[in-house]
Image 1 (cartoon, rainbow over the protein chains, first blue to last red):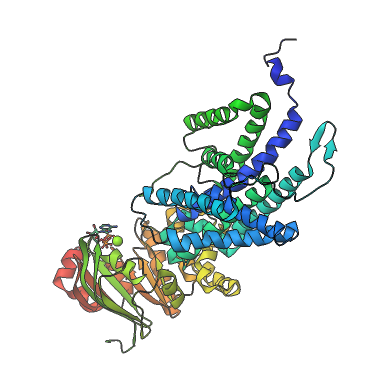
Image 2: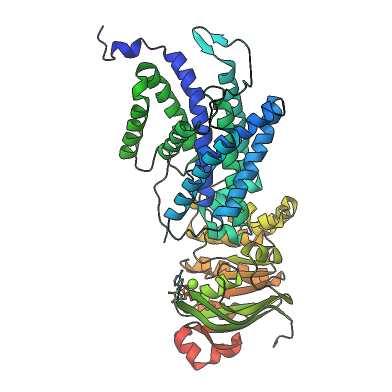
Length: 300
Length: 241
Ligand SMILES: Nc1ncnc2c1ncn2[C@@H]1O[C@H](COP(=O)(O)OP(=O)(O)OP(=O)(O)O)[C@@H](O)[C@H]1O
Ligand SMILES: [Mg+2]
């Protein structure tokens, strides 16, 4: 039989790599979703998404270790913290800066990420810590495929969050208002929608989604101020691959990058990032607006 | 006021700039409660700018406003909508990505009361039956005329006290222009005050009680519609005879 597929690819444990990749990709997708949400509502591309997530994860760590709260409670409180934190960043910083050049928000969010890096190191230290496992127990097995309890939790949390968000944007007046702001800010104002309030909400929700990633990836990796560097980069790439203005695009991009990461990481770990970013370049060359992005059409 | 009714909106010597360019020099106007007031003027006269200022989208550099006897200077657009000033902007500006239903829902957003918004919907469908058939459709797929109906219907969902319309007949076929103006009369008959910007001076003067004529950021004429219609300069510049 003639086969065009190289043997190395046939021999891979595809099912397992896919499951692992989707779990990792879910985490990229959540963070990427946050970036796109903030961009769509506030027209600011945030470079602080990784560091706000890291900072929130440290807050969760404190709640779990110093206060000994159960994971679910710490998780909920951290989401609340991250939401308020994001809204505060919008109110106190971004609302006040001039957006006359696109560079201003970039510099401000990059600066913010550096401040948070330093701040977290100052408060919690730079040593690498282990984050408490949210779930313990033997993994689930489906034939040869192993699904760890943590990965199962990641799938459940991602599915639940995506369902809630889908319903929010589809059915709730506030969610529909956010879509309206994303499409036409002037008309949204004429509907009596407060742009300031929507900006704060967008930042709050986007930041909270990053915090979810942080709390679920810290048990896999480790906890230290630089924990989100790689994840945020991938999430950013996922957002861009998905089209930057498309929420479903962010999810598709995140899952895709997770799978590429997982397969490449198995076969050639040292080339993991190179392969992932080569793929991004290819996608953007072939489809400049991203996978699900719409080309900007200026209306007259 | 000539009509004897008290003014719902008073605009006092408004001056407004785009950057360093002065778009409004000193615009004053009054809209009596229950009336239709038209704002006429050539391209670039400052009609849209006046409406942007009234809706809070553009801050005037000087001048003052009153709505329903209250000072409303510096109010944010959303606060003005909640107070009852609702604008249908130039070029319709419907949310093309959202469905017709969602567009209408957002019209009532300021009322923070879905029940109240639902009460308003039948009235909107009375005016524009076609919208009811298109509820689940993406608004971007509507024809130009339907989009204008949606833009007006969406504004009515807020149950405005003052409905502000910026060139609602622009680009529409004559049949549709008639329909839009018929609805404007009905809206007024139902008790809503209307401030109307129009290029179509014939139709505007037909429906309006009073009109103001703007030229390069200044009010150069104002009178009752019937009187303005007789003025030589209006006939020549805006009525074409
Ligand atoms: N965003 C803007 N930036 C700078 N100048 C503007 C802007 N919008 C309008 N202008 C200028 O302000 C003046 C008044 O414009 P405005 O849009 O209010 O006119 P208009 O009476 O509504 O005209 P039209 O009938 O074409 O709609 C014009 O000279 C216009 O060029
Ligand atoms: Mg105009």
